Length: 421
Image (cartoon, rainbow, N blue to C red):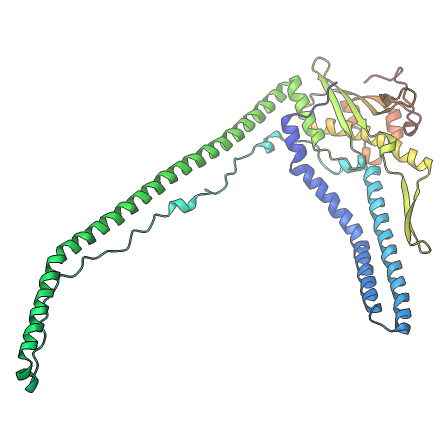
């Protein structure tokens, strides 16, 4: 069997459903840990505040503050230990409730919910949509007007007649000169207006050209996004159609989608390998679980005042064996349940399942696969089970499973006499 996770299964695995499951677990963990975290933070701040006060105090006061500092340190470390133990308990709860976690959700996946619509960002060159303001108006210079100097009055008029005549002559000459230069200045103003208008027209034409280019680029990007979504939706529609016919690829893709939505704890990740036989309507399924040495074995954290250290003690071997064996059995029943519950079309009649791990063989030093559990399950009889009230070991024996006597010790199961589904 080849490990498989199709395109849509990968999208699902990275998508909203897994995120919601993780967020739900995170919220539960946060609720359980919040008190311990607040206590640890308060203790740390108290210790820092006391230490700062001690540096400013006299000898007697320093002794008192030193005691408070020690007490604050103890409180901080004890709060940290409490937080670590809450996290540890949460981690083990996740592993111990592998089966219960899936019973709380409906594993059926309606493929039509995978249809998507293209999401387009806003046009990113809206600045080009604003026309360039026209240039400021350049008016024609005013036509020259002759202004004759006022003649002097009284005695000054009699004495300054020649001076006035000279002023009139100068004003007349200046007017004539201005009148001659005026057409040229008018033409200069017209040329300036034409140049400004031409420059504006060029800039505006460039803006319009660039705007059309950017709009074309944006339309192409939108079209590409639309094409991708259309292709995906078409593939989903094809998958849904083929699933109705029970084709091998469609059934395997759908099973891959189901397992991609099944989020396991970080400390106990699993992989699913499977293949579907259309002739017998049987799904051959292999679950790969982490080897025992990859699963945490810490029992409890403890703070020792005399050494100011946080240490941990290990779980008993029996506790480790029980938890690991339980996780193996829970993984088996969980996977059977998820497939049968999700397959509302009844395309899969039986499941031939095995659970094992890959580890280093101490005898050969090579990686080897060890079978822990093998079982066959028939659809109707399995769905008749009330998994919320079963004892997994008894259920698997009821199904005729061949099971390892000690998965934790890497003892392989004997599958020679397994009852077929």
